[in-house]
Image (cartoon, rainbow, N blue to C red):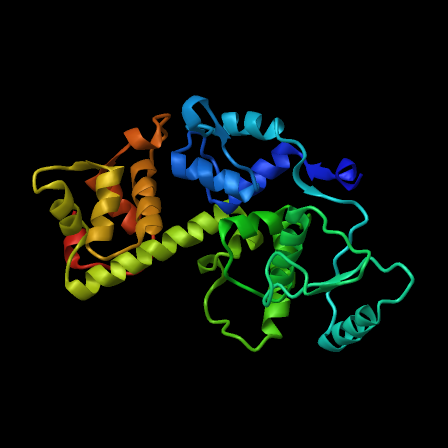
Length: 307
């Protein structure tokens, strides 16, 4: 009877939240890893084809069709409420639960940090609801507690349950964080929770600038220029390389991790150009790479400024 009362979000809302959580805004074609991540965010499993092979959506369009057939998506049960209580309130409630009163209560105490995916204590008449609803409530508690580290799956569940715009979320979260006794020196764009607090365009720009600053700082310490870095990876006589080659070089030289290197390499390929080519077909020119590195203040060695 309970399962007939379930309500889910629309496929459009679900996919938008998952795409934002996985930082795939603007992406159409999906790799196998990206498709799996998006399905995991939505608490869905890939379908199984003939012979037991997993059938994964190869594009966001296919994902929309897949999600539309799985309704309700991220289901919740209306009338099932979650609220935060203090430790002393929880102790009093638990004492009442242990008395096993004859009147109906239908409540459960949860402590996500102690027991995941199951209640700490329940009344006799309590029944479990949709797993996603309890999971989302636990992640919302972490968000309220000024937690800064979230996985893509956790970000998606919180995003689907907060309807306020990014600027309001940011103001509220920063206000609460300032009241907490925990490290606050790291800027928000560098935190995974920024997916809930900043629009994709601002988040992308801030993280790209952070990657450029990091590369320039390391090159400066090594006495190397961006041109020399490019030449080492592309070959002395080459003025172009693929996005994959540049990303690989940035990782091999210990400048950036995989995600940062991929983001910077793709930005260099798209810098000052309008192209309808797929990302995998883009190439990076030496000129655009040097120009991109120059978009963030802070000089490299003179070799980059000669031309």
